[in-house]
Length: 333
Image 1 (tube, rainbow, N blue to C red):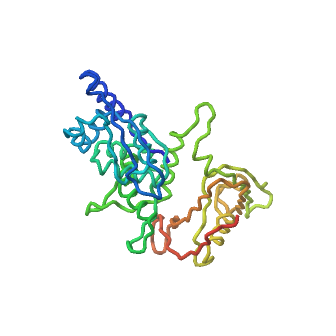
Image 2: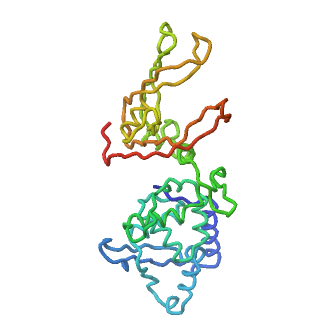
């Protein structure tokens, strides 16, 4: 995943260095940050040079540290950081000097904790405003803290710190209840918005390719046959999609397992306008997966349109479906 800070922070960092250069060589000095204070099994530490003006401008903790007489009198100009891994320190350097860094989930959490520990609040705020980091959201959470694994705890910390990102980038998900709590949102709509944003930000110029399609896109072959007019010619098409739907079933066709829900979505009866009949008619829709992506997203469809009833009477509305569905850890497609 990629952590980014906007150009505004990069311009601010340049202003720190320019101001230090104008004050003289003494103000533009560098300091070596050493991550060897991190204990195994995270591997050996690393020593990296930083401009003190940049660190002081971002963090009041570093500013106080470098203002101490013992540091100013020291010729080594070196500071050993506790509980900071080499990967985290490298990511911090890349983020401050280049504006972005590619990291895994553990390092991303460590970077955020680093800026939080050293009170670099402006950097954290800039990270929250950068929508590219929103790809790390959507992590599952458990209520029982005692039963959580270390990975789950790190994911919860990341979700808490990065929670404001999608709401700032996509205002439609910033709705709150009367008590001020965020309202529950449709995960499918959030995923679609994230995909649209990531497609734009990861598209390769001149090639028309992007990271989202590379990881998630696959081909679906669909055939339609009119059930009310045998003379109407069936139609077929192949389209590129990024997720495979699984229907939860209904009273007529109840389902208990994921593969049944997938079968319902691949073989279904739909209603659409018939060119031969000049009206809405029933069609048999048969879909088949013709290629598999690197990562297959299964969408558990939990909302459906309920038709209007004249006897009740009720209007057509979007209804949420709640039904138990089991699924395997490994899905054979």
